[in-house]
Image 1 (tube, helix red, strand yellow):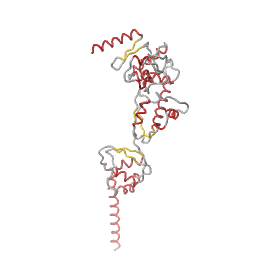
Image 2 (image 1 turned 90 degrees about the vertical axis):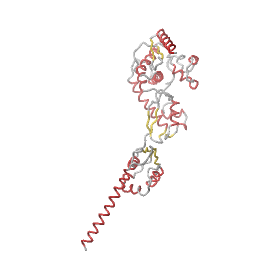
Image 3 (image 1 turned 45 degrees about the horizontal axis):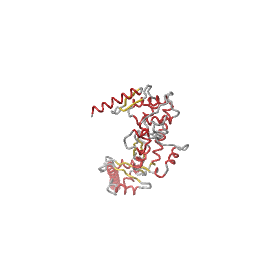
Image 4 (image 1 turned 30 degrees about the vertical axis):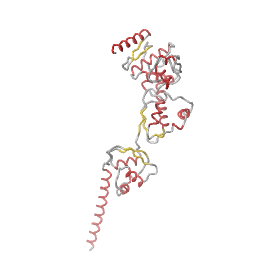
Length: 339
């Protein structure tokens, strides 16, 4: 009888352990099964979410479909039950385990926003307004307040002071924070290039370097040409010649510029019309790239005083007005022949 009872006990224990193991394996298979999603989706876990509310969210988002396994899964596999609020990206090839680990580790999805070289501050504002998952706070403050937030020492004009690049952010990052990051990035880059600059360049400070870099950015996208253009500006400044660069005129016209520059525009006075003023315009006219900043800091050594677009994306450089006018005539003749 004792032997029989002992065997019954072992049998029950064995069956019980077998059931437990089966449940563990069953739930593990459930957790490791690829979810059925036709496309990637952004998934938001609000603050204060617990195991039960998370289950409701997952069901509403059609990531899971049955209630009877999910809570048991979290109880038996506690490493999956830590819930961190945030915005996550769910991919089509993920398993439920992948999703829960993502949430447990708080690995929020990194959105990105791209600002191109040569863009203006107004372009940045338009992009930021349209960018989703940002906390839009710029509209609540004035331009002057924004400048003060970024640089508490003085009120500044932000044109040219923000580094154009791709910036990554998590949901609910402030648009002001993006601006601050771009400002600090530009500050580091300009300070470094100013420190290592060619000591013979005639700029008084790194802000003047940035002004020239912003004009170079608008004149050419070709790095070797940027170096030559930089030399033209330096040569002109040394001779007390006007810079006579179209991008500054366009910037000064603002909304009056309609896509084409006329001779009358060149005669219209603004602080940025370098056909009228001697020296540099008061501020940068665009957000320059690192290549333009380097070109401004380390120009080629040339005797060039003029350049004109060749109509193919490049420029023709000249040492004097006679050469320059000849280049223009040759270009005009080529255009006539094509017609």
